[in-house]
Length: 411
Image (cartoon, rainbow, N blue to C red; front, side):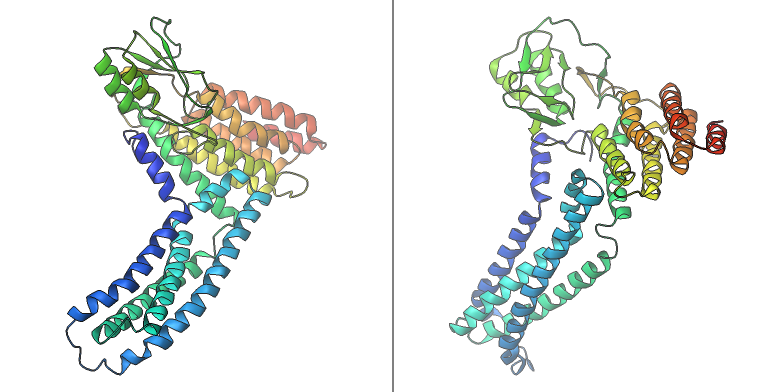
């Protein structure tokens, strides 16, 4: 998704990612389908050879109702168990990515919707609401529902082979980081005018009306408001920053009307937690937490830390990938601080370097990754993290041959 999406769409998409919303939609569809069969049925032409089959609707609906309740309960226990496993073995911040898993959401939604459809069908049959062809139509819809259940069940069973495993979590975080990494690669200032320093306060500052993390900044909206007001806008709080109520979000080159000022502050989406959408720093921090936790004495899994290092390096490679041309700022009235790449390197590599200082295999992989980034990425930041990790490891490793082997890996 590009940076041009409006803030309201981001909020709508966040709601649609929630399992409860999808389950509610499928449930309402199931109920509406069962009810509409009574009214649509009289308009269905007679279908030869299906009269006897229509008498089996009662038993089919009873089978669906009993089995779907059990399958839904079983699926939810698997999902909740996966959440707990990720929290204990990876990081609680990664559970949000599992919560947004479309396959799991679709499976639970189909099972729940089918259960409610069958219950409503049973109630309607018991009350005599399906006379004649309405009963035949209910049978046809039931057969279609069985096919939908079969598709969702097979897809869900296949998905369970990977769902919630460590490799799956690392892949999800890497995928979540790739979109903002590629966006910052194409537009280092989100499409605005990059500036390391904030202009002197020629105009007023616009403050946050509530506290929270900046989850999204709608630059097209800011550009439109700045054009209407004839001003230049400087963004003071980027995605990922926590702002207190009354803290400045924007700085203007000149005063604007109250309605434009309110619309400008509305371009910032705030929340109790950070988001992966525009916050590359958050994604890399979460990924680093997975590697750091794997190196804790209670887990002691250097292999996972090595996988994390490789995944993080691939994200940095996407960030530093050359596109041949540098795009011009699309929002010339919005000044945005550029991405601090050195801080990204530090926040990702430092925790793993600290917690894996005494593990030669982890340190060798870390040095290999930093050497690659020194060639294709931010060379000063990569060299700085390499030296810091090397100093820490040489003080921790107890064997001389380990220190010699690590020094050789840095060359």
